Image (cartoon, rainbow, N blue to C red; front, side):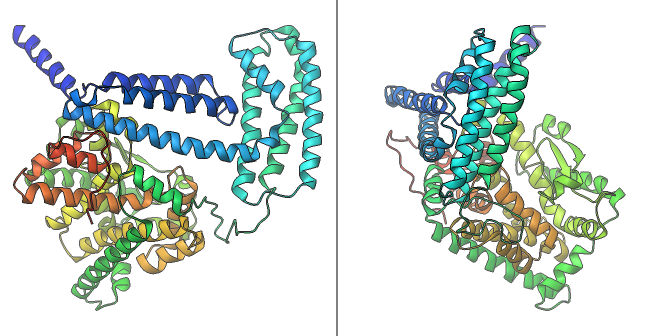
Amino acid sequence: MKKSLLLIILTISVCISSFATELYPSIMSYQADRTALNRKYNNPLSEEYFQRFEKLYQEWLKALENMPYETYSLDGKMDWQLFKNHLEKELFFHGLAYEDFKKINHVADFKNDLEKFYKSRRMAVKPNAQELAATFSKIEKDIKTKWESMKKSKPFDAWQKAELASQTVEALRKSTEEAYNFYYDYDPEFTWWMKEPMKSLDKSMKDYAAFLKSHFENTVVKDDGSGIIGKPVGKLAIETELAYNMIPYTAEELLKEGEKQYAWCEAEMIKASNELGFGNDWKAALEHVKNTYVPAGEWPQIVAEMAEEAIAFLEDNDLITVPEMAKETWRTTMMSAERQRVNPFFLGGESIIISYPTSTMTQEEKMMSMRGNNPHFSRATVQHELIPGHHLQQFMNQRHFPHRRIFNTPFWVEGWTLYWEFNLWDKGFPRNAEDRIGMLFWRMHRAARIVFSLNYHLGNMTPQECIDFLVDKVGHERANAEAEVRRSFEGSYGPLYQLAYMIGGLQVYSLKNEMVQSGKMTEKQFHDFFISQNYMPIELLRARMKGEDLPRNFKSSWRFL
């Protein structure tokens, strides 16, 4: 009994040491504050929301400045830097969003009584139903008057403004609807008076929001024929995002790196192509590899075998500590045909989501799915999604410094997984030329992501040109290329997400070489330390790994390329 109790105490002590820094209580309090405010101020496109969250960020920044930074441990100083960087980033982009909101807020200048209604609902104030019904009827008339004036006014000069205007009216409608449903049927008088006025107002707001969405002057091509509607952010937003992710490079420098990495991949592709008897025609060799697909019913089991193979390779080469629980808890699911329109390949975490054809797909779609998820391509992505990739990341992040999950950055998330594709290549993981082509296809794809995503956000490429680029330069199946571009620009990904794979991977690779080649760490020690630090810009992780005492006014300067 005493031995078991001692083991429990030691386990608890290890867990505490994995997350308790001087900043832990503050960061957890901030997260609780932000979550609570989001629940209360449920209209994210309103003055009260923008003003309240600006105040939140400013108050926490002031609190940080008053903290005794010089007395903190290295982990405490790193948390302080992470927290400050997070707050400054949130405040900056929140401010940009607020300015954009102010430019279109006039489209909802009938909002005051509706805001008063949903704000008083929060405290369950009983409304005067008869008066409120008359108010709703008046607001509907005001909306129709506003709508008519908007039809005669000059359209917005950008479709993004039109969309934000539409979203503002829709957010107001949803908050009104939520307040209405609070009283409806629980208050008989309210129900009697309000049912028809609310029904009519709700429809008018929906129709008005739909009108606003298309009320813009099409000075730029919104749909270039691809059907993909994205939001190019421009050079300033890209380089501001890079600065907050501690990437001290310009967009143009990163474009050059993407082109350099692509050239390396193409040269290696040609070597593998010659080995397979296709000469310098590496696209013919790529077609050969695509046609190694397996029947749909057999594919999931092969994916599971690939996952076990990757784990065995890591352990046989003593590259990283893989907890038994992490090995036990991963599992598989299948991706729907609809979801494959946006993500034609695997997704992962605790569960690897397998892409392969279903009966609802056309013959062409089935063949593209099977060819694009052949064994040699997939051998490079199964480990990316599971172990040592996203599943192991998530497993460790839940257990080490969990308060740092708020500092999520794609350069850490996707950089780590892409780094392993580099490292496994170096370690001889590909068994033959077909495997090398499979790994090179993905490596070439990551380099192409830097090029097409930056060029798109800089206004140099349209979505259709990005699709053609992936087909021509990487050898994607066209439907898969369309899905990849749609995912990049219509999904919930930030403008840096696609370039973060390879740029983050190069950061990790550079750091590994710095620490291991100098003899400061073994490769296994490097990997175990890295994966236990949770989300952060990799330059900060580098400082922690080297035991550097971060100055309060730390600035990013690591030129890792």
